Image (cartoon, rainbow, N blue to C red; front, side, top):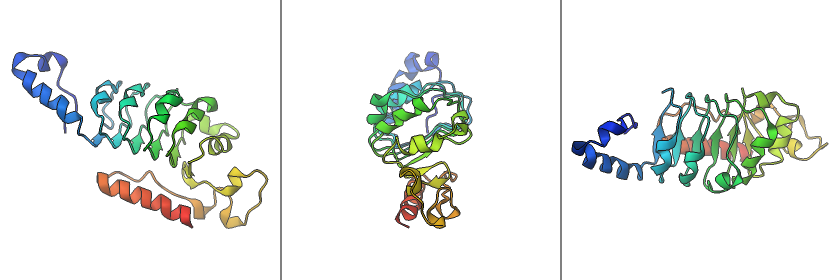
Length: 209
């Protein structure tokens, strides 16, 4: 897999021009990329990955994710462990019609109102924001659960009806944060196809119970 480590000066050389053109063309067909723990500060080169379905860009120094706006086929996006403080507007998220899994934990989000733009993401069913400053705010979970309508799981738990309907008292096993509702959908990624299948099957299994 090409990791974009060849410098612009090298690829612009005459002997590399044809090779470089092939690389750029191949990028359009990539469905999976993993750039984890590489101290990267930019996602600019992902703009040409228009077929991308799974993107793991964790543990870097990313602050801006706008280059992903062309990756409209994304199903899973892992951005945990970066330095993101703000998210793109609703136009960006409404364009990601197939995005189901979004990992944003361990970032620098501090304001709830900035995260409400995720309400424009039509298929988002699982989201992580734990270990972000915003997760310590009072009402953090209540606001997000009632802003992002498709959402079924936030951080480590499936969303309870008790969190959606105010003052509704449910039996203990259906209460928010009950152990029965615990769901670890941040399992290590081993195989792309297997991960997508297993992750979605786990979520759908818990949602049917």
